[in-house]
Length: 259
Image 1 (spheres, one colour):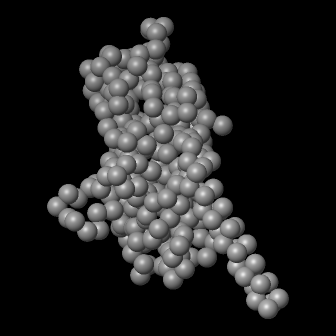
Image 2 (cartoon, one colour):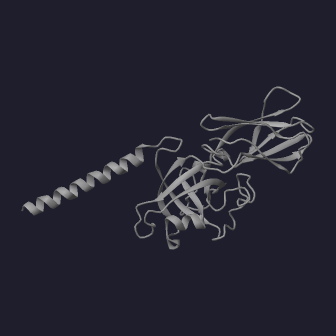
């Protein structure tokens, strides 16, 4: 009888611990990287990252730009019309011991959009309001087995550890400038970009064109360029005269980054 009650007590304690752990994951849902939330994860592309390049955030060759294969596409609920591009997430497979890789945990950067499919009534993982990560295949295999196809996960926002400075790729023409902002540290997702030519003294607010492409109609050819980047947590970094007076369209210039 004593052994029976001892076994019951141990089982009860484990149940309480499991409940508390689940409650902590569910309740710590703040925005910038310290609380966990529930979602699902799938994969797209091949083992070499095929189909993951380019994408809805405006990035190009993810290897050249420093993102590599550590990337994910986001569902509508997470993508935020492109404002979440560049954000970094830590993801852990849960509640599926048949498919989860033990201790498998990854960190990825949002570089693409997983579009909704309203023509289907099943497997609608990227439709609102579901939170979903469509990972590159190499990242998915770090947390789950290939045969799983889809797994439940928990995720949280984390700081982005990027090497080097913020990159500014300047495109457009003398009357319209489009700047791709990438390799952003800190929380990663850019909320505001301002530009200033060497002739003027005022910062000019750029507008988001798509993803992390920012535009202005200021005519700045022949001036050195400075940029001010603000991320979603309100942190600001300025890169003064990052592009020289003889900058060219199609070129990329490197500025300061967040610590």
